[in-house]
Length: 324
Image (tube, rainbow, N blue to C red; front, side):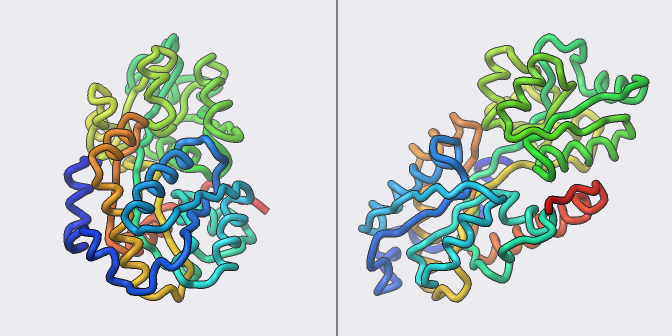
């Protein structure tokens, strides 16, 4: 997504001054905790800590990052839902936790629409289709042709069953009519290792985790699954440019609070986060890691979550993916 377009979506939020951030008189009255369903040290953790530092400066209270990985986000979400609906505990999660897992898991502990009040989306990172640097496949058309002609078909890796990489691979298979088998891994790192060594033919993974490997000539990028070319990989064409339409997806992260949180508190958090996302230093830092700032109003983010759930649910169901 184009950064200027994304930042324009935040228009109408009002002046991002310290005075406007104090509009909710009693908030914040204590430290704010950002609860993440991810381990410390990863891209999402780095993102949250950068935003938290800026928020602390804006709001005048410490911002703590609390990592609670596991169970598809259910551990972190439950921790947030056990706290008061006062905005001092914020759920910072990604595509899977907000839009996929409630369909993927046969039993899921929370409803991202009913149990949470959206604050804003934070960043997005488009997915890129990659093969090994020494793969005989050099173009998207060659990959599609091989998937149709190969007797055994091709294999594609993903970050896990029902992950965005899995679902995009299924969509790619349906769009191209090729013979492709899914291989699920536990995260991007082992999946990318097997792609780089040609144990698996290809993979869709975010630019945030593939850009360095592409530039280091360990992976070859065939196409970006985005409406526009990535600023980080401007020489890589989009899927649509190469004749495969309807494949436009990326991973994204957002912030939400427990339902019932006062609207003034939600707006205060929104302004603080949008101010952080509009900071040139933070934008540059995120872009260096393959992410783009993606601020929205609370209502825009709510509608975005609804659209993402509606988009991915049918594909999850048709793929047969499900976790007990």
